[in-house]
Length: 112
Image (cartoon, rainbow, N blue to C red; front, side, top):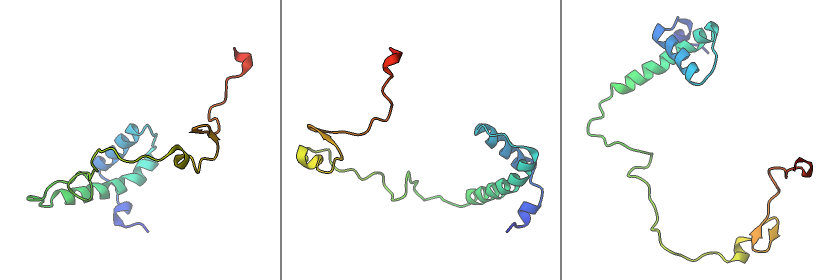
């Protein structure tokens, strides 16, 4: 369902933003696509302007959800798995290593 903003012609600012964003993404957009996308960009711009008006004084910044930075464990030596335990579920084992199918074909012997 389209609302009134999509039926209206978007501002030149929103149209320019669509073209600039498409250029940065190395996408070609024609006038019809700009006309369709610009009202959506205009709504986004308006939402960001509304957020920018919020008073966040006294609020501390967050680098990520959850607060005060990463919670890391101490970098301390601990017990390791035995070779047997580490390779217990390996699909193919070669001595103390696991083996996987070749991802890149071997060079042809004719190419040498």
